[in-house]
Length: 400
Image (cartoon, one colour):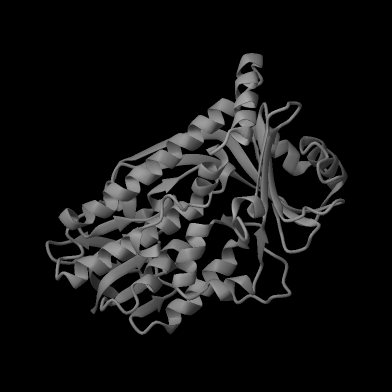
């Protein structure tokens, strides 16, 4: 039977970040993952699942020693952001130069981040990567948690970290209640080529029954799109012939970048909000999508997860240094309290934002257009909004 201090279930971006962050702490770590990432090459096309990595997440990834590796892959910096409502005067825009930053964030392929973190974790003396590893059973005893795998392997750990995604097996096994709600939207993702260059600006347009974002990629005419639509409309648009899809996409985007040309397959997935009632328990801590999922309209999902990782790393290092039991719920409650607060604020903010921009009621439309215009013009408002978008208000102390 193998014995470790921390067993991380899930070798995605967040779980691997926790593993890398614990290197050198004196804690022995095992990462249990169903499948290792596939090797990638710089000349392969970017994957369809990308994330807008903000400044806070960049700080964490730099500290973990993987940011330079990520930049060499499919990563593109963006220097401006623009949000508007279709057929309206409401608009707000940000740019890095007037805000005093070198860039506002990076659009990065999810698998590129995961590969870089997996490689880094493999170089860590205190980290053992186990893949493929399929959990069969978890038992949480007084002093240890016992994990058994389908291949007969057994581990003991002082703490099990649930980083196993939105449909977390660990969360269900621990009987942690989950509040969830259907956003009644599906997200369609694809890569498109545009007639006009994107100029490294991330753009998002709202209209009565949808949200459409264009995220700039390395090629000045390529963008990753995230199109949030009602389920029926998403299914219809996903099946359109390419020429019809291109035309509808350009119209939905107010032809801001001219003619659009589909460059990839189209993927659709349902959007669900989730919030675990507990982020920790006896011998257990939840991170990332296992603890919360939000609407992608602000691109903050993975950034929220990375800040979970940053907070958990700091807490486990502190507890171990002070000689305390890292799996005791009494001590894990500080992590839980901090991250539940941040996640709740983000979830409430995104829900309120989405409700405000849903529908075409004239009075409601006027309110949101005035709101966007005032936020764009009133002194002091945009810098605060930008700091929030960049995650700089939510940084753990050790990353500041």
